[in-house]
Image (cartoon, rainbow over all chains, first blue to last red):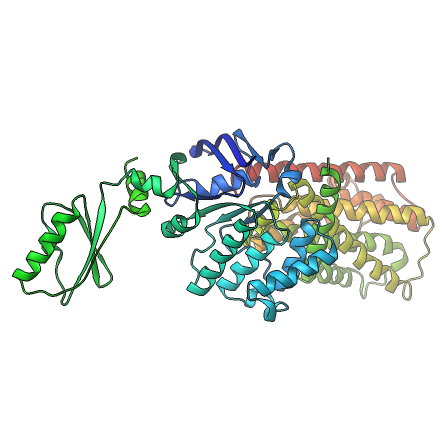
Length: 305
Length: 249
């Protein structure tokens, strides 16, 4: 069965067309990545899918239930983590979870059991009675995630869940998403982090200016642009961009202490770099080549529109 | 279909959440409790007025202020804190949110006003003529006032201070044209015409009927007006909030 189905979604705000004829079909148990530049329509789409906003045209089904006709039955099937940490600062972590559990109609005993389990899993047990407003951003986000998964929803929506988090919190969030997916939840994830989508999602969809412009597995999307590969090189002393102005190098980007060179002919570039380094007595400290990246696919897709 | 129990549970949980979060917020305490008390002291202390005569109007004023002070705070506060979006993604509808807000305001009004009434038993020799009518006055008065509070919060604003100022701009003039400080029988001209348009007038009149047995309108008429006004405020709040949501968060 389709966990999420959206047919011909359209939403305008005044003169602005935010979402234009979006169709989605997401299978049960799938992790689905929804990518797009800022203002592309990601958040509006997620709000339409979760029943927060009503579309001008179109329908959304969650596990086969029409969210506009039966909003409560559909919403109980899902957990939602909105864009910013939206939990009550004047309640403790435990009180926030209690409230969430009650909203989903969980019996008291089950609620207590799940709260203990989730707080422990997300490393919040010791601070369960502290007011959330005293928490760091990462901890608030963990409480937000806990509120959304307390009832083990079959469908989980996450709107940029790792945005602005430190490494530890980010890892914990990603682990939780993986766990939920392994337990059978369908995941709908919007993110700016291409690498995150690449590693977590079975299907990636790219939206730009309200329209879906590509939808496929990350590997197949990369292959759409398989003419472009990259070479990463670092030298024992600083070099300027001029060094890379040569036929075969499409683009050169500084990348920390390295340079990333985009090319459609890595063999030619490698030979050129070795020869040039030898000629100018520059030591090459590292040299790696990598295949087409999802990021490159994303950039090319969103730029070509 | 499990929608009806879910809908009712949504109202209960939202009411509980509102009680826990908003009853102790400074604007609620300030405009809901302190202000009506100061108004009472300003008008009655040192003026040798018959408190027994004015008590029903005073009780109606307390009920009006307390019940209508919670509603204006909730929605703007939730929008500012960005918890409103999460609330809408829970298995609740906008209707259950509005009704939960109204019930929370109404319970606050009943709680505080009952305390005032119980405390006043020791100071003001008031006897209630019709207890049933007194209870009806309490319930209808608090629901009407609370629905007004929720309606005042409905314009698209995420600034609680702005909404509180706006709500006081509406609420304060009402106490001067509703037979609280000047009985309706002594009013005439424009003041009397305005009084007919104030829901507080019918609350005061209903409390007068219940406590002293004297009223300008029949209790039935007072009850009908209050029911219609409460329903009107709720429907208007629903329409405005739905329209706001169509425009975005």
